[in-house]
Length: 270
Image (cartoon, rainbow, N blue to C red; front, top):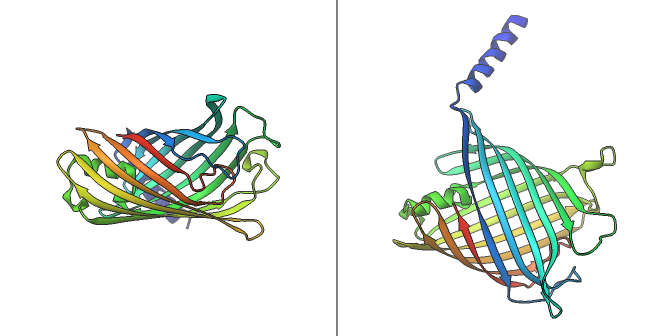
């Protein structure tokens, strides 16, 4: 019996070793958003600007997929009558995981650590952070690391086509270990993305996103967030620039609230 188990274990190890091995491929981007409106439900500081940065790093390739590490940061900057720029909060993510690509669909299994740090003011109880086990699945075009390659390579199947992606998060919670969670009572999260690829031309493209989030807390109460975004892509050989307009028609989340805010921005993706 032990001999059979050893053979199965060695076969599994051989399957992993037969992969191509280490890989160092990164995709990502940066964006700058200017809020056109100034209302905010959950902050004493009016919104002004947002700077986002993300990096998706492939680390190791197996026969079944890729081990990766995602890094993301979002800095919210306020503006008002007495100061043109005042730092509000920094939100960052650290996400190790495993990606399973397919010819049409893609899925990711990962651990997500997310934290909010407030800058120019104190917050009672300190920063907010959580850790989740996450699974997402969707068409390949719904993921930005695939969208860039398809647009740059002029995949004309993008014209008048649809993409979607669904994300599920289960929150870790409890008082046994300090760094599991702090200052929140979330238990679950679902996000849906629907993307319409309208047109692809020689040097530009256009697509629109509808994104909706739902959180559930420890008391069974729900919070919703819905956002629309229109994107005009300007092409280059290996990366894309995008001008975009977005509108958050609903936001009940207190930690990074954008309720009824309009914004216009510029994004670079590679």
